[in-house]
Image (tube, rainbow, N blue to C red):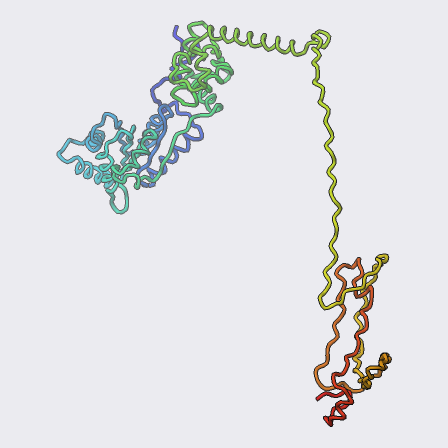
Amino acid sequence: MTYLDHFFLAIPPFASTPDPSFFFPSHNYSNIVASLEFAIRRDFGIVKLVGEDGTGKTTLSRLLQDNLARDHATVAMLDARGAGRILAALCECFGLQAEADPFESLKRFLLSQNHFGRLTVAIIDEAHHLEPEDFKALVRLERLDVEKKKLLQIVLLGHSQLDERLELPDSGELARYIVFSLATQPLNDEECRRYLLHRLRLARPPVETEAEEFPPVFSDAALEQLARWSGGVPHVLNLLAESALQKAFVEGVKLVQSAHVLKAARAYPNLVAGRPSRLALLRTGRKFFLILALVVALVSAVATLVEVRERRLPSELPPPVPVEQPKPEPVKPEPAKVEPPKVQAPPPVPASAPAPAPKPEPAKVVAPPAPPVVAPVVAPQPKPEQKPAKPNQVKPVMPKPVKVAPVKAAPAGPQPVPEEAPAPSNPGQISPDDAAPPPPVAAPKPDVDLNDAMKAGSGVYPGQRR
């Protein structure tokens, strides 16, 4: 009894060889197949498909080959790793005889195919292994056309290294002729689950009645583990699922559990996609779990002791030791500094103002400054000449009061402008002009003697000068 009979299977569901009959129509894969067929049938030129190992590039190429073969197209599929020169390899794939110039052989063959209206396609797998001369040869084939129709449709399949190779200057400008550039993507968790169930359903034997159902093969936990450890890569997913079936069959279990998936992951440590810590757990086994449990228990015990010690009651704690506080030294008061009283200097007295008479200082009265008063101009009156007294008779001369009369006409000549009283420099003090009026100024005496002038007949009268 094989494991196929154990799980009610007709054929191996997870074979590692690419099989287009097990094609899973995910969203990404369906778009790639539709884009490839559209570009080829519309005569667009070179199409590129890149992806990592195991992502289904070869399966997609074989599916494309089968679809084109239904329309009687001529398809040549070759692997660039062992093909040698690309022109000679294409001649061999198309069944042409080897000649000195393989390019001319291919040209004649393509012209004959176009004459009969047949589509000719070349699918080159592992194209990142091509030599620079091969890139230049593909450019020559791409330029072959008749009435704006390409004679050969080229599909390049390879890793992401193919993009790097096409950027090099020795690629022969092949990147300029690439019209479509596609890429395969890993499956997500839900797509991985549907991918496994899809292949199991195709591997079942045909049922006689619709009511007949087969028991499930993978548990939900096993499906989740397969999606996690495979990383969504179909090739790795097939390897893990096939290994898990074998291990469950050895144990005699008809439902694959997550433990069987973990055992299968240990068999492929270099292909498993996951966290490094999980890989370490898989490789070390139970010893690692035991050591980890001991370390966790020790850390928990130490943390508990520290927490209990910090939460002890105050009564259990020893009394605090009294600490003598040093007595502060008395601070001696510093003697107060006595500053001498500041004496304010009196304001300077203008040079033109007469010095005030000394008198006792009255009480300071602050009065608003009065507007300046302009005194009327008083013309000086001549005094009568007094006769000189005889030496033996001296009579004192008494000054007569001066009568102030209104001025009718100002005398000719410049008139003296009376000076305004200066404003006090300090409003809080009384200026000398406000404190005491200036003393009266005596009228000047004539320098000419009247009697002598009359006797001499000089003609000078009192009050006049020569």
